[in-house]
Image (cartoon, rainbow, N blue to C red; front, side):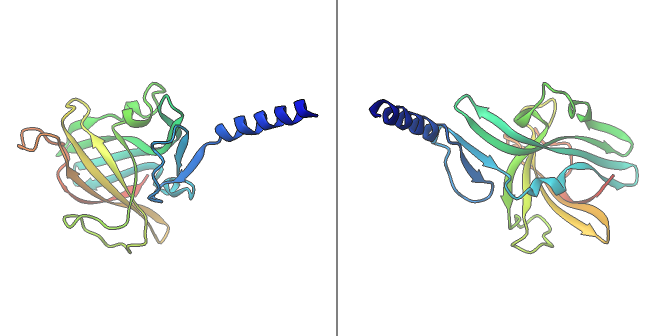
Length: 198
């Protein structure tokens, strides 16, 4: 009997240690010091952002392809996150400036290695972003990287809309490059854009 109780006690202890702490994205809870946590999109907020989206103005356009990267391991210590990731193409006046779309389905490129990646829920946008949303509405802030210049990056804040059956993204894009002297910057001009789902 003692052996059985001892065995059950050890089994319970081991199962307790193996528990993953699930932290909802946007909850504000911080378990990053814990060795076994998972920051999860528990309400499937990312799902509405998934797909191919395009902004067009004459012969200039921006195309985003976005997908969810679930249970992405960010370290060797059983730390996981759900991410919204993707790739993009930017054409200005008929001239292609950036195109990373071929990397979208590359199995070697996952998580933070994608040109677009992130998981931050925001409710209020910076003053330089046009904000037509209610503060309770979830918007997603992502990082957008330049494919050939590691110092050039920007921020991309997305708001999902369904406009009488037409799916749209309101996007605020702005340069957030590491070198603040202006010598390095994201190719896409700072501004507010409306994308249509293709």
